[in-house]
Amino acid sequence: MKKIARWPALSLILISLAVGSAFSQTAPARRGTVERIKVHGKALEGNLEGDSPDRDVSVYLPPSYKTDSKRRYPVVYFLHGFTDSDDKWYGFTKHWINLPEVVDQALADPNLREMILVTPNAFTRYQGSMYSNSVTTGNWEEYVAKELVGYIDSHYRTLARPESRGLAGHSMGGYGSMRIGQKYPDIFSSVYLLSPCCLTPNMNAPQNPAAMAKLEAVKTPEDIEKADFMTKAAFASAAAWSPNPSNGPFFLDLPVKDGQPQPMVTAKWAANAPLAAIDQNIGNLRKLHAIAFDAGDRDAGIAASIKVLDRVLNEYRVQHTYEEYEGDHINRIADRISRKMLQFFTQHLAAEPKRK
Image 1 (cartoon, rainbow, N blue to C red):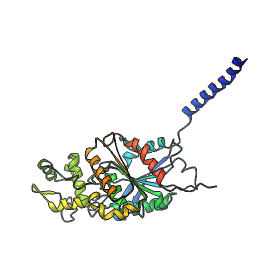
Image 2 (image 1 turned 60 degrees about the vertical axis):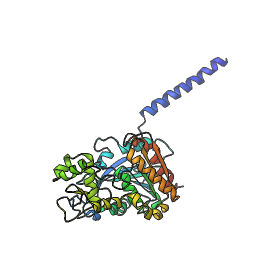
Image 3 (image 1 turned 45 degrees about the vertical axis):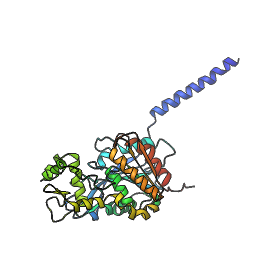
Image 4 (image 1 turned 135 degrees about the horizontal axis):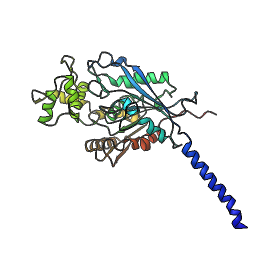
């Protein structure tokens, strides 16, 4: 009797598991939506590169945004890297990462908070703005921290307060997040840097005669298009950090001229390194609610620079989280966003209280 009695119960369990399995395989995943909009930047008007001040901006809206019309959300402003663009990160152009897919998959974890993500297109004539203020590139700091934030708050259901705004980025975007974050703690409360470039002085400067010769060989915009990565990075850095409105056609000063290093230009570049200016910004960094940064151990120069950042913040007793993991500049970024960055902002960004 006992053996017979077990079979119906076991059958019900097996049927339930089979139905549950079938449902999990066929039930549609909860997905967010992506909008690509234009946001005009008054701070970008008249830039000498000739880039449009009407910038493409990709916006990720979480799954409940379209169905819960009264809910407001925290926002993470995510800055892309050099030679990248928002359309590459948001799936409009095939790339090594698809940020909306990463976020959708991560949100399967019920402990993660839904949030809006916003990424402006910072691809410029020199393939990256460095998120810096310059007559040549335009005033990107002001555009991101003030104009873009103001537009998003006025057009989307955001929690329009610093404690609900985060700033993050990869590579050049990590640099931009550090640069802007340590200047605008009244706008952003939490900052996450993914493999941030250019923290230490002159990381993009040519280091040998061959590299200097490549810079001086560039005479036309077409030459930049054909140049190697580091030559392009040097031109972008010069446009952002050593602009010269009298030096056409590129309107910048390079750190080399006639084969000779230019100490004044090099000094300007060094002054734009966040670690060079960090002592003057410690007060602002203390105002941030949370700071985190990481890099792969095979991303040697960047891994070394965030060790310095960790040391300096420790010396000033500024709370932060630092991690070096197994990886290079891009191969673990999706995983870091999913498992680290989104958890960081879930923990540190203030959300809307649940309605009764």
